[in-house]
Every structure is written in C-alpha cells, then in structure tokens.
Length: 93
Image (tube, rainbow, N blue to C red; front, side):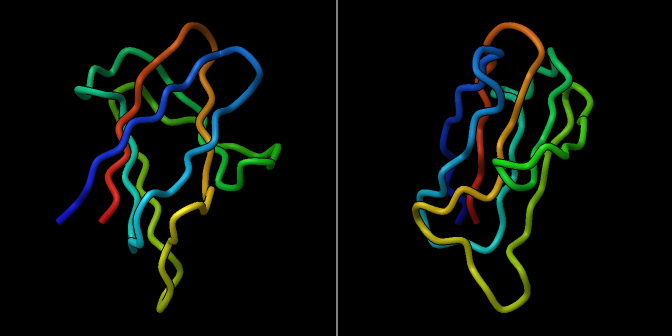
C-alpha cells in the first residue's frame, strides 16, 4: 500500500530535496490535488546541475534500482519551480 507524504517547493534558494520516509521501491511525485498549475524541474540527484522539466499536471516516477530499495533518509531527487510556492505529494510504494 502506497503512503503519501508532502513536499513544499518554493522558488527561493533553489530546488527542494525530497527525503524518503519509508522503505519503498518506487516514488511518484505530483502537484498536490493534481492541480497542474506550474511546470517544474526535477533534479535526479539533489546536488546536480542537470534537470528535466516536467509539464504542469504531469507526474514524476522514480523506481529504485533493480533489487534495491529507497530507505528512510535517502534524498533521491529535488524539485524546483520558477516562481511562488507549490505543494507536491510524493507516493512511496
């Protein structure tokens, strides 16, 4: 059963990292209530300068490497936005 957690992302100070809460094999991030109000950038490694822009309303899915799991405390990705503040939900399953 997937568990859902919140990530607040704001434009100040760069991308905001997501911290895993449970042992899981897949993460799915999307704008809370699937509002689809803003494009967002995903950094597959929080400290990376390389990112992928996702269109408003789309989901970002990140599976764990084969045979491995995400663990509590891991920070596998970060999300950045251009302006304002947006709430994201992240499903851990």
